[in-house]
Image 1 (cartoon, rainbow, N blue to C red):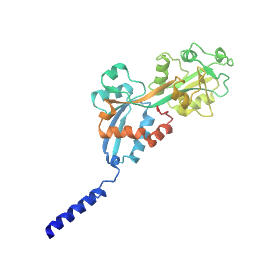
Image 2: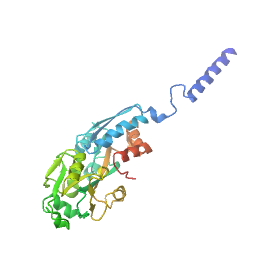
Image 3: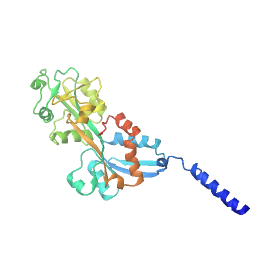
Image 4: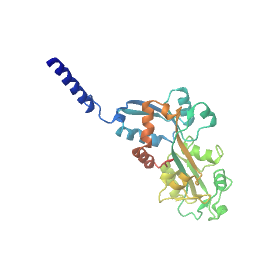
Length: 277
């Protein structure tokens, strides 16, 4: 009888430990996700991905993101080849890429603002006029109703993700005539702000009081207009996977769950991106 009671007591104690997390369970199963997730792709997404890498450990302390920034195309190829879990692309996926089994997971939208010196009298340009400014067909602000002043065309350096997106959206790749090419967004803002007649482009979150943001086709660049699509100079930030998110490993699913969470959305806003929701 004592032996039976001893066995029963042992079982009760074991059950109690399991229910109370005595086996080491923290009670927050999601925090138990561990390992590493490899990401490869867009240099334009570097700021966001690095911020995500730092923030995600708050909810998943045993999960490590291992990003590389080799360009959107390289990231997509890496996912298809199975050498990366997630391919970061600062453009939409093509029909051909989707046909190969890639899932276009849009995690954010980035607006590209057109900025000028604050004294500029021009408030709006059309998409066609912007193309002509950057290809050298329009060279003076007087052609747009402004002062008789030469337009100083500024932009990012070759290889910049922002430059690549700007030129691709407008369809003016390899046709731009830059007066100055700058290697940082902050440098573009500073130079445009101190140069009479200057024009440049930066991500939406980098607009400051030192520059003036132009309307594009009579639409202001703002989080709202980017979100509703009326401001057309924008691009998606895609985190592509081979197959649907639900088909991915627990580690990869955890990354997307974090991005969708309140903390993840705060990361988006902190780096100047717009939620696609």
